[in-house]
Image 1: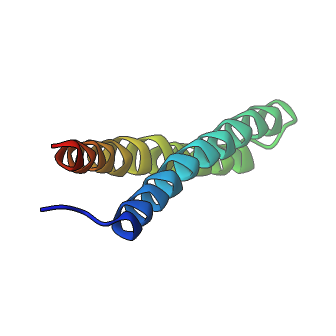
Image 2: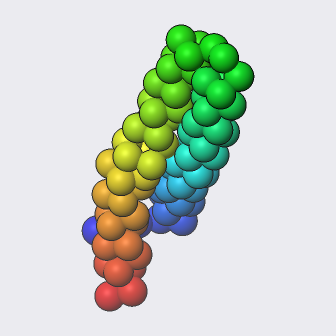
Length: 87
């Protein structure tokens, strides 16, 4: 099945969304973990634990769900669609 240019463009935009989302959520996770450490060292262990949990959730949703779960599978599908165009 030959794919048209708009279909390929839509797939590329979806791929870009998941890649950028994974990177942004990874950055948010790093920021939250650093903030949690500073909060615990500042004398607020309960708040620091809560912020650390939010950082872990950002790491779960970013690199794992968006990056490994969605981006990797969509990238493989996108590459296979591009390979069928060349044939």
